[in-house]
Amino acid sequence: MTEADIQHITFGRAAPGLAVRDIQKAYAFYAHVLGFQKVFENGDPVGFMVLEKDGAEIHLSQSRDFRPSTVNAFHMFVDDIAGLYAICQAANVRIIKSLQDKDYGQRAFVFADPDGNRIDVGQARLAP
Image 1: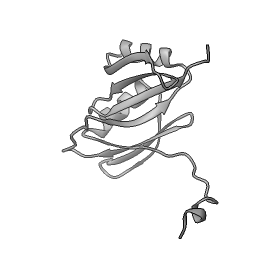
Image 2: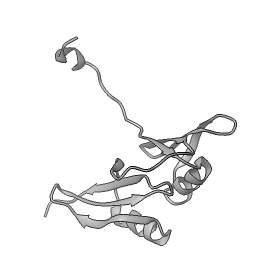
Image 3: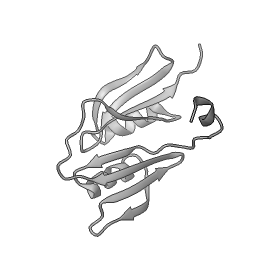
Image 4: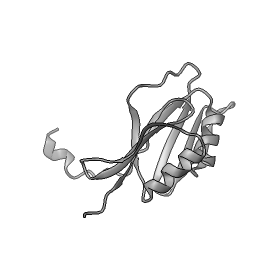
């Protein structure tokens, strides 16, 4: 297999997988604060869930001994970052990095979900 062999394969959307200690608590956060809907769950008790909102998808996996990383778990893009930032503030979501303009052309902030997973959120800035 060569590098040229991969050029004809088109990749679709990717879905980050997040480990969580309490999958129902995590689901409540992603549903009630961020508006995601559960589209699949597996296990008895449930140990895996797929959540979707618009073009975004998140896979939650139960891991009772999970310890969060100090790096971002994933990055997502939104079309109203100021609105999402205000929602997170109103819901007392832990903000790791406040909303600010970045030198790479985005407005961005980082928040932590209830398990400490760091989520980096961005929106492209309009050209001046």
